Length: 200
Image (cartoon, rainbow, N blue to C red; front, top):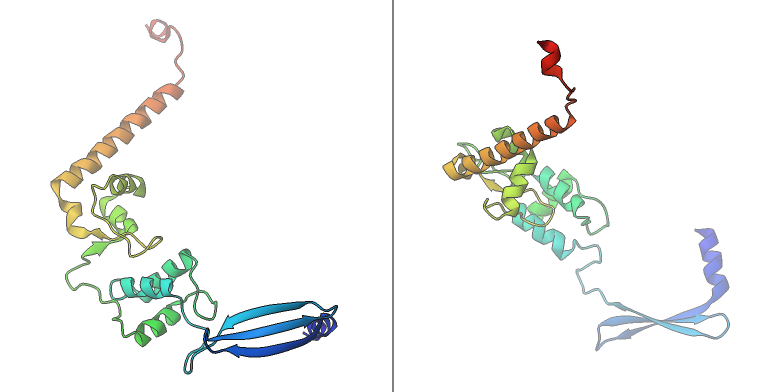
């Protein structure tokens, strides 16, 4: 810090601060050693406010996910899409809980009779499949899955997984994968000539 202060004193002769009331900005006029000037403007903070404010994008994600997802999951989503707190920190469960309480948003309340929606991972575990077939169905717009924000977990209605058309779609994908695996195995199987004659 002392070195930085010495550098500033070496290159800057003086800084004159002024206030532009009409634009509600603070104006800094930097007088550099050598005679040049630079004007820097910054918004004036209103009474009762401060600069370390959580961005609107992060607030919107918290509002959409509050009550439907645990604070830990909300924090993971905010970090995944690279949103930060007002102080520039990554999100944690406690930070999300603090913001949610300040905004008056509800905490996560699991459904009494089981979840109404499942994440992609939960749906895969329930069906005993990988996430690839489910992602294909979501991409084809056949599965009514939504996200609170890009990067947030998929929300899949639990009752849809038990419908006949969905089960048939999963079976078609499974059958296609089984056929592909069999063809791949056939391609890599070594076939010796005249094996049937040799065995007779």
